Length: 427
Image 1 (cartoon, rainbow, N blue to C red):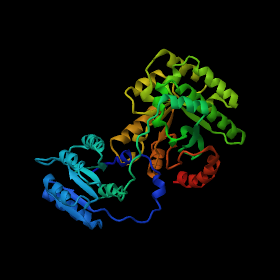
Image 2: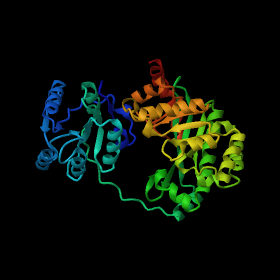
Image 3: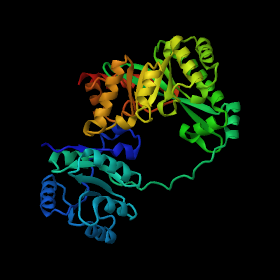
Image 4: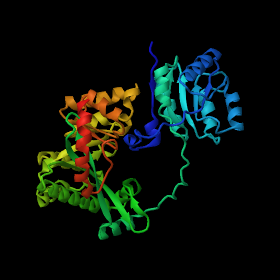
């Protein structure tokens, strides 16, 4: 049987503009340590790697031997290829102990236990601070091993992390009063044609002391302090106003805005949305309200009534971060969504991951059956782009296409995108 592998490198690294590195100069090859209790496997892998021009390849026949080697020289190897099934100290215990050492390289898991077990181990060990490049089923194939090793990047010493910023509700109320907010826009494009069909409005806080802050640092506090309604209305007002300007200039695109469950509890929410689009002179169908799946509350009466009224007024409704909550199918059954937005954890590097790729394809299939648009977020490489085109996803969003940007940069980006678009849709 042909060996297969999974890679979850993007989950560990977070988003970065992968396409920006495609023209980088050739990198040095990583030094590799092979850990396996089977001497035959060690020999086969060692010869394979040397034939692939990896010059520094070490071997260890036990976890204790590998730990002793790394104790003396913790930075001697960039990548450890580790068997999970070993007598005595197995691969899981070895890697748990390794995470407490100065070693800061990468790890590739090797096992005959199957991809689902290895995927779980990857997630478990990733939370412990190790950077897992991916998993290989035994016997490891040459091309699969090469693909994972190509994901390796030389270690960069990061600056010390900033101290956590404590935000309180009073600060957010002040920010609402003084309008300390900014909106950046991230484009969404049609995967079939490459046309720009819309943008997502992303709130930023221009904090007077801490500088630019992102939503993760303040949205929860805004919800808990009762400040999220004013914040959301400000964002929708700014976004629809900008959309109106773009429409008048001839740029006819849609706008997506995130809303909170706290917003949907307000009985007047749908009517206020109608007033805002009327003021901006844009159609309700051009505003898509994104609701994070994990925050939905089933069939709670007021939020559900607002969602129904919004659809009756022809607003778009998107279920955001699909696949990360605990009742995805129930939400699709009970809420009249028009768009299914697939979480980046099921998108980036899905081609080579036999766990997440079926979930990605299944999500797109569900959207098609329910006559919803499918949107893939977290598109960070050209390979992501081509896979999504192959499996029939409708729309794409991510750093491979564009980073979030101030509104004045959007027309300039569109002109640049046109040159890239022709090549990407021609393939």
